View 1 (cartoon, rainbow, N blue to C red):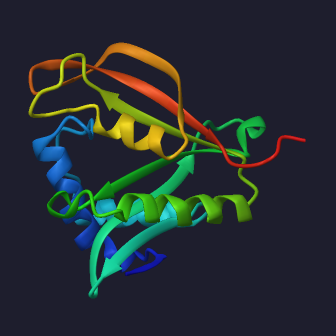
View 2 (cartoon, helix red, strand yellow):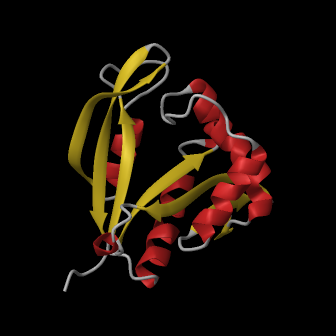
Length: 172
């Protein structure tokens, strides 16, 4: 297993992973799978300031995690939002934990102190959305800081959104 920085050339495989979540779940709030060019552009934009990591096993990308802007104002510069996606066929192998561990270390090195995750959260668990993401983040040391009710609508159902945070540095 190898974790490395993503490159724009990884866009095709990362989009394959992401597309599953767009088409089959309410985890992603997008309705349509972005084009490969759009996804490549997202990677390029993120890499200008934030880490964007991929996990490979046997030369095949199995997941990715990245950070991005939390809020635009200068006072939020030490905070970031994080996202993670693992190929749905290889879940529960520890890939997500490994990706987040490396992402956290990279963020600390860059001077970030707070990691935030915005997570789709089911009103009622169903085939489109479970509470697994909340449980995963809690297991990795994130804590719940807020919930927005019925703010996401996909597959004919309303979902809530929760915000979780993890403090990764000293606030001095």
